[in-house]
Length: 408
Ligand SMILES: [Fe+2]
Image 1: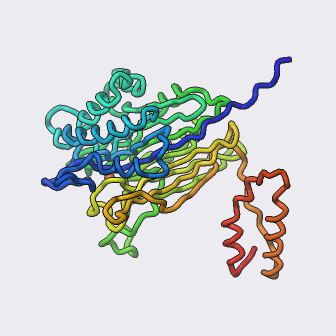
Image 2: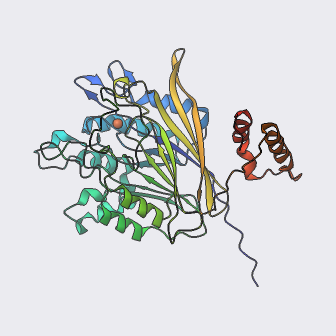
């Protein structure tokens, strides 16, 4: 009998998640924070990233989840390309994953007969050069659905046993007034999702991390209150920048085993763990980590009191079936003369098919007895082998409980 194959040695994955860089200008003023004289400077953010201690080794993936530029023009993309090319030169093994946002649309092309995302497409074709047709295989066969080719601007980046990243075009249906507001509808074509789903590699034992990248958000956003709006008065509509067919997209993510969604748009970093159990789901249910990046480049006027930031995300496989994903939100701020990145906050979630492990709950009528139980459990959990069970990383939680007046 042949020996049982051991589980594959999974790679620890590091992802740089940037969003809303907004290279470009409006009325002669740069909309990008880093400037040389008065023009957007493609080097400013590069210097911050390359000096970041978390990025001293190249990331496996560098993601920009939309709004790479301000006006979607050829000129804007020239600056964005210079920025990306500088990073590519430094990080030769890094896979670059890009998704278009509502600003990657050139409304100046209206009436020209050309699609407002034509400049974005031209930029992608130059950036990926000979690899464009393998990453954007749906685009190269866009003639199959000629009435909606722009929905097929879908990037697929696959490193077997490590990651599968799919980027979709949530800006494909945006319309200029008078038909619609220029930032809606936000929609991801169901027929394109079906086509992508059919073409995805089968989920095997390789335990790769599956990521969806898009600009807009799938779920309501915990954001700063909108200025000028009375919070007691209903507006009468949902946030229109949520993906309009979000429920359908979430079903697709569940069916195809996606773990993480990366997005941008609001210029505010946020994270959300979502888990849903339905009939037919695996025991662990559908587990999604939704990660929103703040802006790493837009000027202050476009982000209120929010600072500039980006995410460095680590995927650490626990087995072939699950993975811990840790998001390190890096804020960019001036330290003496230089702008530098440092940790703002960190959050983590376990994604994949491992059943959830609930933190233990300690109950006692007397708080001092409860604290003794916690201490005893902590001491007993060291099994003498030098390994610490996963649940023992609940120390911050325990600490919180100890300081809490009500101990359950
Ligand atoms: Fe933006």
